[in-house]
Length: 305
Image (tube, rainbow, N blue to C red; front, side, top):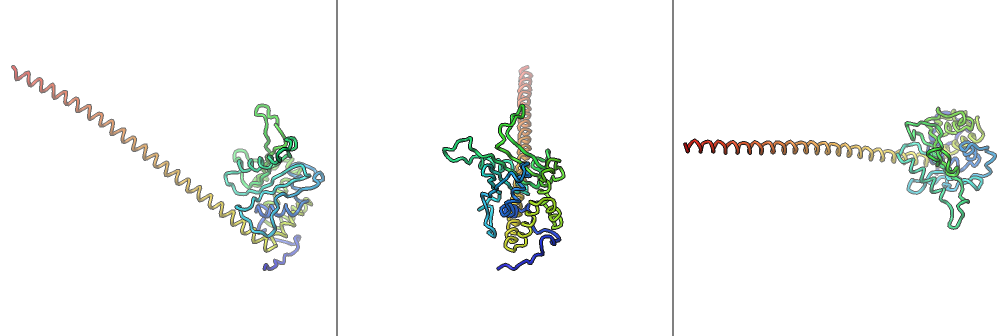
């Protein structure tokens, strides 16, 4: 059904990459099919020794080659590692204006995973980590930010088993020395790489990144997967266009409401002016009537003389 792309070996690939891991389907697929690469990424993000992670299992695998849509699937990567900790990884490169409530929803959903009758002390630590290609808080740009519940006065952390982090792919240049020491900047660069030469250079820096890089290559040279990536990309672009159109409509409605409010204010001002003028006219009429009455009285007095 599908013709072979007959790729050259990964090491000989050149030129631009059709799709990179900012495509959330490819992001999910690569991490799902490479446990060791997944372990390497998790270790980097959580500042762990990769050897300390014995097993990492994707809890929501997608079927390779199956067309997906937002209506049927969530493309976050839900992972249970060492059978004791949950981490939710998600790629979101377009600002849909809902990341904060969305990420909190994912985090709370997975944290609240105890079955009826389980002891609360058995709850598993949960990490929600989002990869964004935009600034979540433009006034506070940061490459890798981590948030936890803490005391507002003394900043004492309430608990370390409920953690939310954000990697801003558009701010790799802001990576700290600690970020670089764990290679988080290298993973971010891999996700955003647009040429095979970039990917090959990154693959040489870390064996786990190399595994992910080769998986990217095998995926985008598979016609079936390439077609899904194309469909997914078009779907995302369509959703973005829809949201932008709705935002523009909301803007136009707001502008119309503003114009209507302005006209209403002007109308109210006119009505106030008319009311004031009517009051002045009434006052003048009263004065005229009084003056006329005085004139009539004077005339009557003169007639009597």
